[in-house]
Length: 158
Image (cartoon, rainbow, N blue to C red; front, side, top):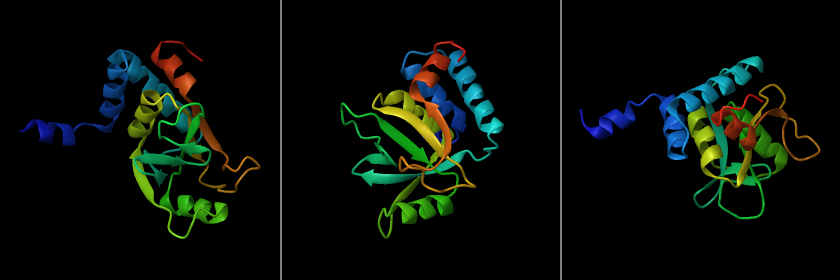
């Protein structure tokens, strides 16, 4: 088995653990933080582990208030949808164009982006049953703040 085969067979959770280790956190802390996030998802009846996010620019992903590009000075939000249908409904309602480009990200990939890019302030997982746009231009949903995730990795219980 080649190193490439090992990487392609790596469980999804290891992507987040690896990203956390690269940021200086222990494997145990990363696993505990991931377990806490999974518990929050379960509390909100979110069972999917693959999300849909708009590709908004060259090398960037995101939606709503911004993208994951490294534009300094303005916090960004990673807006994720639980299904492509909900994402497309939101795009049509928000007037994001005729053919918005979606990419699929796993939970671990989204959390890794959250800790690796300090310009991303939060991950917002849009509510599947209510894709309506709120007054701030975003759908309702579960918000995971970068600061909260960092606290979990540091062993602080929010």
